[in-house]
Image (cartoon, rainbow, N blue to C red):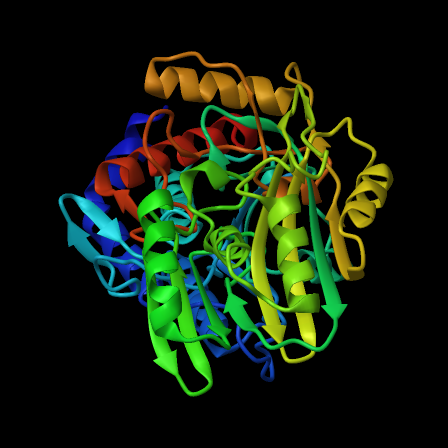
Length: 455
């Protein structure tokens, strides 16, 4: 802790709040690529905003072709990276306040990205500005990295690795306190099953988001289905509606979005839809496909019915069916997100999953291997101490199912910004950060940079 740095941060509290609100008001969900904007116009705007803010503090900035931006300060043979991202997941359903209005409600700034990860990104810029204003000497060059594709592919980190050297040591304020030194492997798998179908089903936004809403067209009379749907809704507490349309009816089920690494915080509408449809008298291939998906996915969160419920020191397996697209040609896409304990053989996992989803074809897969940094390393031990000194509480390092930029660098961990015992609505409706927590994070990030990067 440094009193001059802390004072500067406190004196610039209002500016930090305004900077975060400006960033949140940019709906930086990945969009169609444009020149110098590989992830779309809005993500480009978010990057431009952050780099302009950094230049206003006198920092050197580099725009790496719109994939990622960096902010540099200080000197040193080694580089300390602070890895943040400016893209966000789609807003989804169920907000009490507009997701991009950045309104202040009960001492909290509400909006998509306030926690994941624009709040920490803005705190990182202000923390470094405070260190610069205090005139602290560096032993490592400090580089804030502002990625633009963390939520849907990591193309930003791939590009960075092609044009620049990865940091020697780094942390990402995109996890939990006190420090995350172990991250499970992440597997995204897309399946399809072609057949002639009378159903139309669509739901979900991303594999890494618990499916919050699903709509299905059923070629049956709405009046006949209404009591079945109502009984299901009463039994499961999933809000459901039935609306008659030409040739049948449309059923809509509303769940609750959440981060796929913590599916217990959400309510998966995709799984609920399969459960409801399993109660109907469907025909032939439709009935078989629904039956299989309901049997194998059930309302599970850990792959129990698939025989994939593994646990080790890095945590318990999670499996989230995040997206479904089903049309007259069958199931065009079923996206699964899996957070896999580090001891599990991924080839064996996929072989077992493929055998369980009999008749489904795996047509796309992405894998991020698990990540681990020793607890007695300089990085983990210093950040553990930093958290203890600022919070007054010593806590051991954590293992999580979330995936952060830390796994892109051998000697990197996640450090904050979710606080123990404080609900974190990451990827959920009403995502928000309290102004108190935003300030705490800014102090903490400054402490971390000082501990790892300054003399």
